[in-house]
Length: 257
Image 1 (cartoon, rainbow, N blue to C red):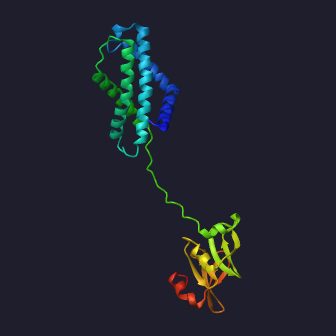
Image 2: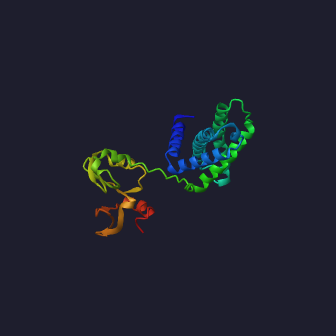
């Protein structure tokens, strides 16, 4: 058992020992067993001895088997979908620590007693199945696991911008020897060629519409004409011209009809 499993088991045991409802149930079960004296304990011990005997067995076996059964259900929750499968596997797992406790306490309390190991384990399995059945019946259903798609990587060109201006990429334009990078958070000048800047737009869907302009497709608000020539209006109000050389590309991208 690795460290995380041991920690989880100890946490389950602590939860059982600090629950008033569980403590009352264990005390009641111990009292009933002490008074009835099953498995020849009526003749082997007096009432205080039987009470102590059953109290130790009930507490240790319940806490250990409950912890192991709960860990088993948690670890295999998404493999064992049907309640009968979960009950069978968890009951089998929980019966092992219960059998160890009962066998060990019986051997220590009654050194000469004949304890058939197989029959004792069967009794522990039945009791464990009852406990696990209650756990499964009362436990909330496990919601299905949904895997979220990974977030898209930001375009590399944003790393060249000051942090306040790093946002959703809208527009690139030439300004002397610089490229004016426009985002929904602002704008910044970057010393580089437009062709290199376009390569650093990464997975952002965009199109060069002029020798001096590149636009992100989702930033285009509408198409218009200025002085009889086609142009694009972006969401930030910027008007970007479409040159004749890029008309076919703009039509293919659905920007022009």
